[in-house]
Length: 509
Image (cartoon, one colour):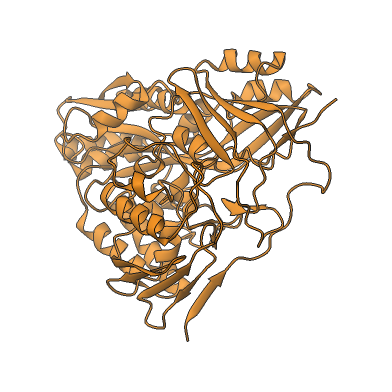
């Protein structure tokens, strides 16, 4: 029997009649979005903005289940190879054009060429237009995790006009179907959006639900301002110059909690803090050396300093208590902090004081602070650790090379939130985070995405977690959160994976 996924009516996030239309909201983030072409970037700084502009066919609900957004539903054939997707009618792009199956097909074909999550549409064999407002995806074979992957917001498969979809990365006009439309981008200053008056809300829902639901744009404009220095951002919030901070330091959040004019939000857990090796460059190409680093690290000390106290220690590569949590696997190799054993492993590895360059960036404070503590801990066991701190765009360019760096610090936020397929897809395929492929991990990923049942996938992920600890290409340091703040007159805001500026309004005096 064919399986069908349709929209489920969600609960409204606000009290009916309480919303106030109008006003200008200024949101602060610490760095420039490297791109506003949502398909081609997995940057959080970009996603903060673009998820208010564009929409995909499917997204995740609040409880991380795929739900239709621009799609009406999906019917999956009994053999699991055909996905018939009726589209919502009457949806308009920001240029006034109505969205049709032509736009959807062209957008998905562009994603296959340029999308930043390479594995997302990998199972798709062909895309057919089966009606003016309907497409059918035919897969190369059954892929039980396809819809979950397709709904991923990491680098979302957003829908844009067909005439834009023929253009290359970062060559498109910024045109989506979302509740806010693009006005201007001034790097190192701001991105400005304005309400899309012809936005077609999804009436199948009562309110917002994760990345989807019924969205309402109350604000006249939203400006995402770039203020790299946290102190300046907080000062602007306290004076009312800005209304929402995407992130602020933990000690500052604690201080401001007593201020009746400011609301504080804790977004936890937000991300894994990790150290990723370059397995193509010595000494990180040596498994014994990688094991020595794992054994040397005091993760509690690293996390406490890097996150200013907003952290939790957990060895699992899925969040504790979540569906795919693999239990005790790897616990004995996490937060070991055994200097003598690390020294013995370095001797086994034949390490001879070669420089161990830790790449980090100046944009995300946790990255740089973690690198400093890691370097000091590694020096204490005899590793010649040096830090190479650059800006985030430069760090991205360097780490895509096979040489010139040995390890890098990274907050993995969206991937563990989405589940094991999303996480492991970044560690397999053509460009794994640690540069070299691990054959066993690649095979386990293929087994994971081809296993039908949740119980079966849980068993596969347990083997994946064991393998991650065995070969040590990436080290999980711990889990951290995000402190956010707004002026008290900002209503309807709910912490999420990006600042949802729809269903948010400013209360008038």
